[in-house]
Length: 321
Length: 272
Image (tube, rainbow over the protein chains, first blue to last red):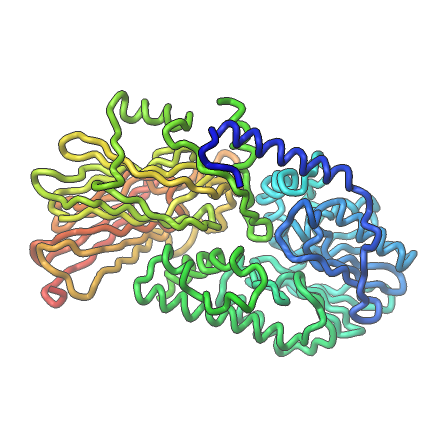
């Protein structure tokens, strides 16, 4: 612990040295991890299960579940990871599984842990990148911050090569089917779920549903959208016939209906208690520390993201009539 | 000092979106030696002395754990009553390192009985937030807090300036109003209050934000403020007023596109 009595410039220097040291270690350790593990959740559906967020030099951005589906003709990648490093690791893992070419990359939403590894896959002109029709705008407005963050938290020195070209995205509005060769994959755009631009992916043959960050497992759900409509989407998902699933964060070995029940439970508590707080004139300042805290022990990273979920829902619901 | 500034900027550019929200521990610097503040202080107050008001004049509150830099709720409470002899005339909210450091200048009246202001702010960089009050006798008092969130002004607004509810106001107060006593009143206006730094503004487009609010009761000023996009979208204000009779509470807000928004609330005998 640095004493707060040190002069601020000394503290700055200490911090700087600390940060530089962290980056050097990281740069030195850039080689491929010896075991980039894949899990085949259903025939032809491969996932790398990432660590829990947030980003750090320790996890090197390997914080999301990303993967691919293999058809008879080609491969569709679902989410590209936090950085070129992560994207390339996935690409190498794909080549270990199959010699078929990659024909599609599907980006489930704009958040950097799903997006910024994209350039690892696009050297080949035949790769089509799919995303929600609102994704290109999100890429344009958020990229700058994401690239700065990449430099700051993952120590990536040349972030230009991570810049994602929003015009690459083939927009999906509604349902779009792509054929990987004897294997139909359906991409569906959702209106307001985790974000306002999520797509999910279904492998029709095996009934495998790739939820992106619409559904979380053990990790606290994150709301970057409208809570009421998000819950309606989850209700819709409960009615789907899902035989196998992949979610954006957390373990994949728990029953699908439990995940949905837990998540709707959390959003239900949030919705009910935020509404009550607004009705009872509990200010936002107090609400972030009181609303929904009964859910605290149920979720990983609750302390990190719950207050923000309260803020997002409170500032929306206060305009309800 | 330049070295320090660069590092502050480096550390200050923390993350906007939840997937990346990592708390960067950064010790609180000495609030009197912030270069931006030294400059702002000179420009705003010249050589006037600003006393520490935290013991008996005002208290500034905000949460220590913050995770949304575009929506940081704050509360300023006066620790002295408003009387004809001695009262708080102005409250300045200063965020040292925001694009426009003066987030707001609010004017109050002795008739209010008590001064409080609650609102929500955007923070672009790690910075001190300062609440400075000026009394009717010309004295300045300050309380301040160190805030570690960043990116709130340049975040994509995500709100729609063509919102059909643009300009809609919400009022809140107790069902029963007590005459000649301070009563809390809150109003909020639906407005994107766009930041000039927001990354989703079209080039050449002038950011649309509210720059003036004025609240009157029966035609007499209760509170008014000069504000800007350092206040969060859908700006919200909570403060005291002391009605002497039934009447009309009216709000007028004006934005940088010269649009005027007005609304009013009748306080009739049924509420007294």
